[in-house]
Image 1 (cartoon, rainbow, N blue to C red):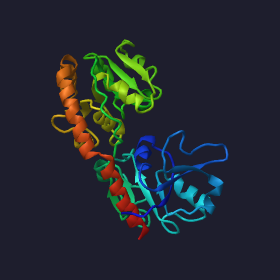
Image 2: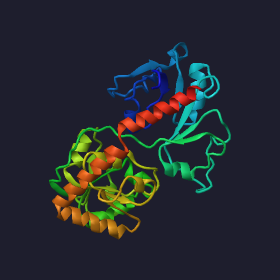
Image 3: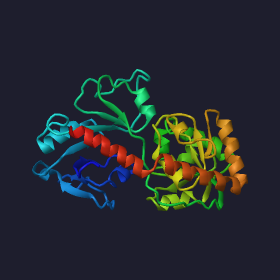
Image 4: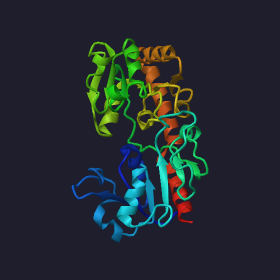
Length: 320
């Protein structure tokens, strides 16, 4: 077992950090002079807000980087260079955005900082050159089963669906809404129905809710709709499956590793997904059965224990 480490990390992707910060280490989250940063109200027993100006006086065993600008930021705050003076790992959350499939990762030409991809899809599509490369798939906190299926509607969780549009598959929701009303949770979903040209009672901006209230709300719907084209593997899909919802997913990114037979439907033919949604909306028993299988599989494949154990192994390797 990895000894307890003092880990410098920023809250960049809240869902990912919600899992990562549940490990046995001390997680140091910088807070600037204006009060920005830190835990942001999250209740993580092993995480602590640290004034950024005090970090140079703190013991830091390893830095977990998630943005390129954190390389220079770490050196400024600690007075040490990540990967050289202090061990570091770079977490790659995102798929490449340009020149696919020839995208060269910004850290491809060095060996001091390993890159940890959150999906095999990311690892496949980024050219990481000589950089040490690992894949640690997502781990999801089990908040319990929330499926009731009392509402003959679909649920989706998409932040900024109007702005992000095709990458998140927001443009596809109009077609789904002709099968069943779709409630879209997440930030800045207002105006989505107007953009889609559908009645505002068919695609509803349902609010940006915190977990587990979010899971309780989507659990009232018959199915989880995941139309994402190019966003790695959304944690919201795994959270919905863990909550007991059957999945209706576009067969892109790494969704195929999550939506296996019996847990829902995955296809690149959107008509297949429309048919599957209609079947689940019309048959709550089928929805409950597939949702139960989705929950069982998600806990087995994306459980928190496996995720934290793999991170412990990588952090230990970074110390060598």
